[in-house]
Image (cartoon, rainbow, N blue to C red):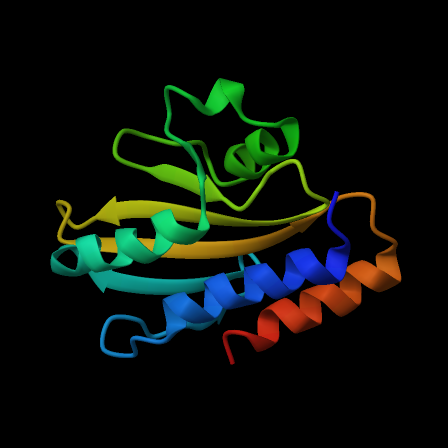
Length: 140
């Protein structure tokens, strides 16, 4: 299994790739969910999906969520579950560091909220705090 630094470097590249198009994305930190949040128009969906599909290979919708790892199921449960049209995408869920991306269409499908979380397993509290700080800095 790759080391934490290697995984984090790859996740940073993926998150920064999402932030490169400032016309599409304006990021803010959402304290309520401790997540990076961006809202974009449905007309940008193909562009966004291109970046997401390149970096986040694992995907779950409401029907497939029961096949997701327990920590991802718990994350979705804390958000109120997945409804039709909503998706959760992640980096490799078998790693100790995972970035989860939730896509929530709203406004009759005209807008999509995208939230990104940093999840860690088998990591000390101090290391988790350091990693979380680094993750937040990607969206500053």
